[in-house]
Length: 341
Image 1 (cartoon, one colour):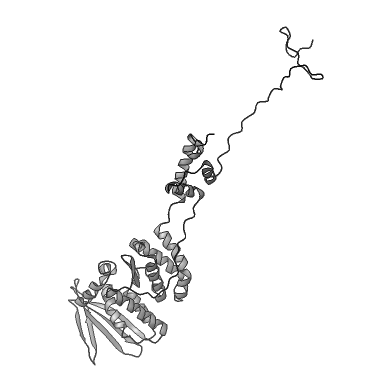
Image 2 (image 1 turned 90 degrees about the vertical axis):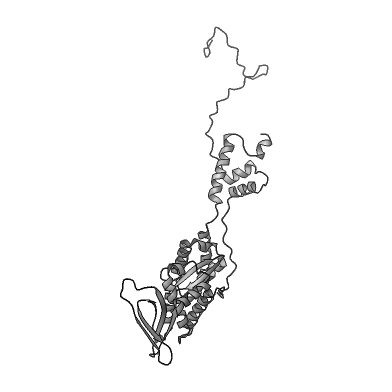
């Protein structure tokens, strides 16, 4: 075969079959991982670190599933840097809050390339109740038709009688109250205008829970103020609540959150390349065309051709003249083959 036939592969139908198979297998083998699959691999890499930080009452596999559900519900999270997204998930694990966006314990909100962690109203309630000193804590909204009075000073007083009308009116105030195990009580009140000023400073003011769950965010805002005044006895729970309040305040002020988490070098596992993929990559990069041997090695052996029946060869006839050699006499026209004289 000419050398030219080896430069571009085999000629004819076999060449077309090889090229079509190469294109099909290239699409199947070299197909890059989706962003969701890449994030899942990164979570598996960080699983040991998350397991150390996770409180005993939470399951690591459940936390990983919740993180995966969050990015699938909010695809823009996958546009955030992997370090930012993973740091937010690990911070949730350290606080013991589930960022599913359903229970309201925490929310993962994308802000450009940065993932923002917003502790929810129920998340702050959970951390406060785990402190060991709080007997009762809650936050409520006040509408225009409600009866609501409060007084600060030495004689604290907060009285709220909700309206039973079908339309209670516009939201006017939010407040949070807490009673300690020693009998002491305290409360905090904010007007709607004060809440909206906090919302305006938030990096996620136009998306996420501020849009979908305004009342919950309003209650969380006043609860955060109250939590800073609560006496907490258990060191670990005190740090968790303070950490959640600090993160929430920084987000509310439009400041970057400092998760104080050191992540190891993240090296997502690359897709294994087959020999055929390497051949296709060489073509894409403008490298010299592969030889037939390269393609054959990548695709494996071709199917065996059907066996060809060989016809028996006739014994060679030799012309006489050598002593002791059998010489077939010429056949006479009047003599039939195979007959004896």
